[in-house]
Image (cartoon, rainbow, N blue to C red; front, side, top):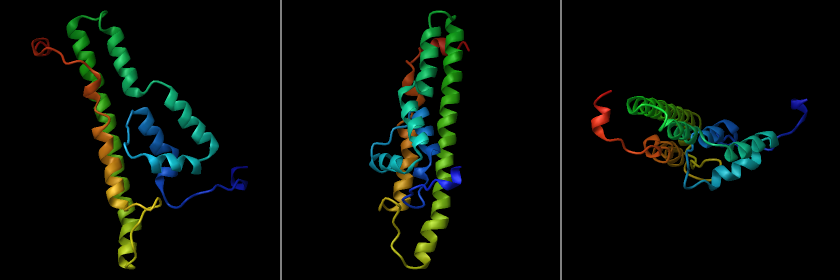
Length: 165
């Protein structure tokens, strides 16, 4: 069934995979220069595009964690609320760090399979969208941390309560 369908692809870009874009949406990672990523949606299977569109309408992981924190704020003892907040922040930041590491590995793979062969053949090195591959992938990776800072979701706590943990 699936083998009979021809899929239109633009080239060897991982941006055509729903995985990268789903992770960004779920972790609330925003890419200021997203034109290329938006264009890549048209090269995905309809079901994948629909899934990403639906995911964009749902609460994001970090927003869900913030809502859990806010909902429990009046119901937990201050010490328990502070501990819950720290745990949520820790796991949110860990998820973002893992996504950044994933993107760093992807950058290495692209450098090995795209940049190095192009340099060896003395060809101009451009990505699928016509951009310089390494700087573009670095910007996507760096956006992962800059624009998905979990600590911004939670109000600052007074340090006297924190020291009691």
